[in-house]
Length: 245
Length: 279
Image (cartoon, rainbow over all chains, first blue to last red; front, top):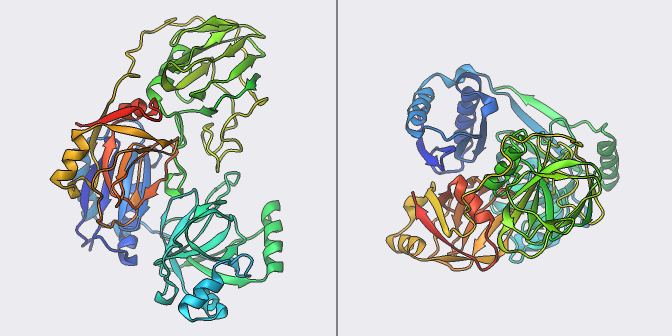
């Protein structure tokens, strides 16, 4: 059942790296997350470990003490042979509102010229796909979303901008994502998402997790402004859909 | 309250770090040189989570509004209390109205100042460590204030310790990183056969090294990184991630610094030399 060959290597004295075959593949990510869910519920004390999944790997970090690598490796390989499907993993789809007005989507014109598609066609392609969160990193709450159709795959900008606006939705290669804060960045910016992706004051500072799915939908500037106000006063309701496994 | 009369170059509150959010892209943060910071907390019998001040290169001028006990460690920054020299790794009684100031940088780069009971910066996501996208401040500005509890009597178990200082050490003990096996013999020779100097791009996020080695062209799928991870870029640059470093990366992770080596490196500044030693 758990048929992937996995490699287990030390990563310093506090961490251990588990790698699945080296490709970007939703099935591999699913297997990793199913296994980490099993580890959290049945094998490891969750409060003692940091568990960082990304694409085809998961890194387990023990907070203070050094780990006994050889012993843990054997345990992990045995746990992976067990029926990891006994634990249930919730699958979530987030519907996120994006304003694609050109004062937000500052690179829309350029990629429209590059691709030969109209701005409307680009927006419609971007909103019709469902993306998977393959990793969170670079900045707190920055999601790497995979599943970008080939016509929307563009190289990063040659000169990164020194400031990309918080909320900016970008395209880079096979990925799309949202800048959770003002930051330097080289992605092609096509819009702005009105939902804060990282809020340290919130009970759950980053609502999204690796493995979740995302679909964008287009909103007007007026709706964007309204969402912003609703978010600030804490009455904005995120669209969360729980998918059947 | 502690009044920051002058802030110095970069003075920030740091504790043991922010855990539990690495999978959301939040770096662990915390003191860069954990070895020295933990020692100054121990001298005051503080909790392991007590927050200290991390003082980088040019120190602040600080005014104590309540009596307490302090200790400092790490870099030697010619500190004085009411113009009288004070030493690292000693418990010092501070009266109401005392002024602690720092002078010339003698050795190292980061000094740690602990106060009895720890500094009470706001606890955000389980830590008081400053980090710009999580906490309001990323450093203490001139005129800012920081809370601490007054303490009129404390009997230290030990009033001073002699610390085996590593401020002159150049050697960084490392273990093999996940992509170590991708290195060629030539790259290994360059990596371990010579010294590297710290470039002017060095901060709490990362230390970039001046000298290049042959680059690693193999592309890699983004995966987790840790404080102390040494990345090798395609152009041959070496980047050592530190406490505020990003939690994932796409460059090969060729080496991993030991905890002690992270502390050793945290005391290095622009132009200082280091050498890798494989454990």
